[in-house]
Length: 236
Image (cartoon, rainbow, N blue to C red; front, side, top):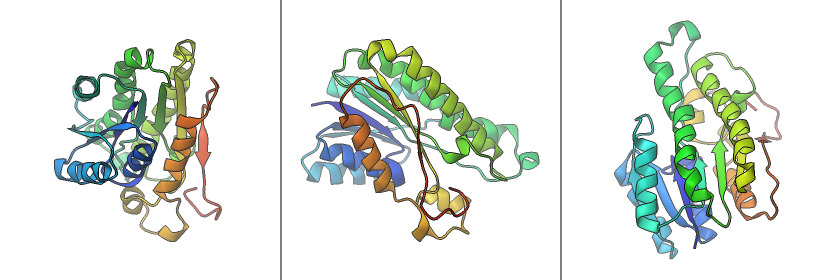
């Protein structure tokens, strides 16, 4: 049985992906900041017969990637799929964004995936089906008012993913970037309260794409999946 790590797994996209990977019979390592919420997801997973390890970690902390990988390998003895999903949002004009805020957003959205991937590579090299999936955003390609810190962090994630895919191709590690438009999550509702949530992509739709990426055969890498709604409203 293979092992998958999902960061930001207590809600939204991360929770949907964790539950989907459980259906695919992966051992799950779910990462979040709140032990109570992690335990709730773990209970859901174990009710279906899945095996799950919870890791409480603040991805804004420099030691988080190493801590997560150590716990994973110590418990399950391997790791095969890494889903860098955790994200931190910020909405505000550039002129009102201070350095502390910028650093916090980039630490979670760009630095943590970079160093989690680095920590995972030695184990992925010996996996029969090694996959890294980074959850980006449409803002990693487009610009939206009042989202300079968030957008720059997602641009960084996009660039890093493109380079990583090339560097580990020789090792058979597949690296993918999923960049959704508006998804019906708490983060989007906070940043864009004007959007009709019924028009948004559902987290389960992203989980279905993850299912495709981890189960598809062949050695090809899909560098970028840009997922948008059919409606064509703003923030797609």
